[in-house]
Image (cartoon, helix red, strand yellow):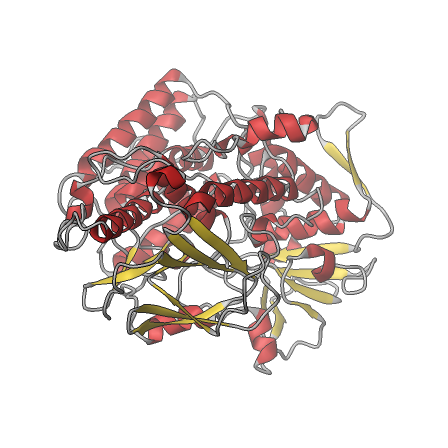
Length: 628
């Protein structure tokens, strides 16, 4: 593929218009508006710099209605669907051109100024306004149009790339003329979010004629206003739900609170919430899970840890950073050992009364035995088995988060995992262990995520109130009931049948196994590579795709969920967690700077500040750390 002659604007296609695309374009805007320096940043904004709106030509392709928000933060969601992470994570963008979410909410939604978990629709409005501000920041440097369409393929062209688009609605920002089916560009950034479907979904079975259950199927939870409408999920029905994670909680809240139910404090002063039911609700909501348990409640933001526990976390972070700096020493197994060490210290520091037979091995301190066993079994050792197990685990996690119960091993593992997560994601980036070792890590990760990234305490209290009222029936979770294309298997004795099935299992991250034409195209054409046992594409630190032969695919970059397992932890609004968006912007900025200088006749063809050395070497030598 030949690089286009350095005349005219740089043509950039961005596929996806959710938060990941927003953060990357904000990094580019921040770079453009800053003064030039030794690392090759461009001069300040505006026509006075010699760039009178002709530097960039950006085309964004996304079928969503509100750029910046993405499907997860759609503006039409009902208010009971709330953010699952503290809103303070949404700080001001790299350019400083827009407010942080807390500052914006204090002005636009003062009733939410102190709310750590605001409605997702409000977060969507914030992100949509932030997108508009980003677009305004880039306006002095060129054009940006948003097409409400999907990209289905990317081909190498004679001078760059051709992005094949699917016919769809009119562009949000009108174009001078209808863009062609194939859009020629110089650079492509793939920053897609959740895929539309996946091979293991019940909807895929239905479409392929493999759905043999004689039950109505709702193929997803979102958008709740259509998928879970009373016409499809009637009042008084028994609703079987495939899945028991956060999307299941969205469904449960929609079918209760969204139909007029209320959650009120217990007048007896127990501290519990009571579920005041309405006739419009289903008679029962019956989730199913892989591990026989729901997610654990997480403590409120800012909940203090003992000083010794903070010291254990700091030491764990230092160990991860140190071992990551030693070539080949930090494997996923080693990361898990450090997590276990820190969790054991947390358990000791909160004086938890662990009741475990320590055995006789060298690794036999009671707290260490307890956390290891809990990670292996997926639950605290003393959690009873049999009917009522899932409800008891939820009840205990709520009590621990409230501070009315002594923490146990699952709490310690969850705190160690979430509070060291930035160091863990950095340490495991580009991990090259074999498929068996990675599979072992993935199984542990699923357990740790359940301990660490569950619902906020208030939401968990509401879920527990639904369990106590009978609106949510966990007997299928306890019995290990499953829902497949063949129907519902493993019903507990005496259980009444369901009237409708809802699939609350989200498409997995990555490119493998998702029913997305672009993902399949990237894999089938060899434009990207995926390591054995992984799900996402291999990328360089600046997000450039790596081909199966190990070479850089210049001009093609991927960010977020398409790179899962090569980079972990993408379902986040924390723009600081991953360095790739900032490094991508710097690489693009260097190309812009080199192009402009060549046009002025003052730069030789090989004087780009990034050079053309081996993978990532020149890039890393000419940057000043992680993005701001």
